[in-house]
Every structure is written in C-alpha cells, then in structure tokens.
Length: 109
Image (cartoon, rainbow, N blue to C red; front, side, top):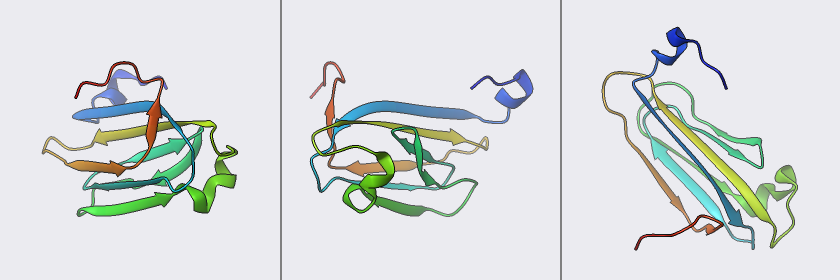
C-alpha cells in the first residue's frame, strides 16, 4: 500500500506482523485491544475491528471457517496483522494464539 505524506501523518504509530503457521486443526486466534486491528488469513479478511473503541476482544476458530481460507490441514497458512494507532494517545493490544508458526527464523526464548 502506498500512502501520501498526508495519509502517513494520520497515525501515530503502527504495527504489522506477517507469519506462516501450520494448520493442524483446533487453532484459535484472539485479539484484545482498544484501537484498529485488521487480520488477514491467506489474503482473506478475517477480523475488522476498525476505529477507536473501548477494549474489545474477537476470537477466530480456524476449524469453523477453514473453507474461507482454502487451506487443507497440514498446509502452511499466511497470517498478517495490522494495528495502526490513530491517536497521539497510547493504545494497547494483546494477541493470544495456539498457532504453530513455521519459517519464522530464530525464536529467542
């Protein structure tokens, strides 16, 4: 995505994570936060918590919607998460998951 300088100045900070995980069945992803969040799984929109709001949580159970992502079990799935902060005040978010990430390089304990 290309932003103009004016658009780039509309956020105070942002975070983007992109990883692959192995879909084996039973995976869940829970986001809790008080600002925007967009999650894409295999380039399909999975969570949209746009706008400023009180702390809210959203959970995806992959088994319930695996057909949407077109991935059979044991296949790697691409997960991308965007969390822009729209205000000069701090925002918070938390991610809880049981994904088994793959191809992510060195994991520091």
